[in-house]
Length: 290
View 1 (cartoon, rainbow, N blue to C red):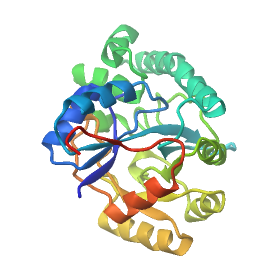
View 2: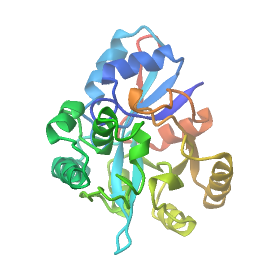
View 3: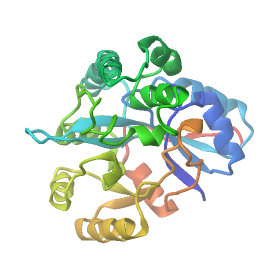
View 4: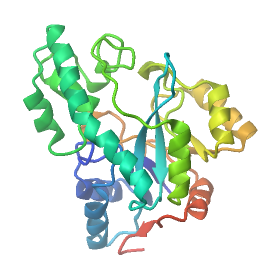
């Protein structure tokens, strides 16, 4: 089985619509794909509808990538993948809404900072690129690419521009990661810390921090990811073994906004099976050919 547990659509900062993502996942030969847009579930219905039209043995896992932040004066952002939770559970739904509502003023503030730095990005263009989805840094970065300020979207995620310590970075409302684990668990979901040692993105959680999250109920860590080199993956596998955490692999697919293709990294079927066994808030959606 080929299982990709981290993808994005136009419901957040990907370039494929949810329906296109499902079709592309099938064309890529995936058996299981998770739709994990940032802080929302707006793409799930379209993806499920497209899956029903496809005569393919593809299974959809519903989820989200939650924006979290470790507290303190030197706090930093982390992302928490949440799988198969009840999207109607009120407390988690309320927190997701707070994060989404803060995305627009945050993006406007980043545009203003870029303008102060001499980059003529406009809010109007960033909003066009978001196209009604949850606006985020990749949309701002795409506007910068169009202007020739940087070559690729990834080039924006540096201290020069939009990284967590970047000159144009602006904070937004984010969940405490321990609260995120609690809320997802209460909604019947499973939590996996996304790209935990992607140092090129900025500050990362320490091994001691991952151990604290594990003690709080974290289910797993994303190991096989484009932003982890081989040494980092080995380090994470050893840590996960010590902490009895699941280890996943995924593409973090964003369509044409990133270079990684669907299924470039995958999750072991036994790990996927354990995720589905632990989840009680929702169930994987089988395709018409399954």
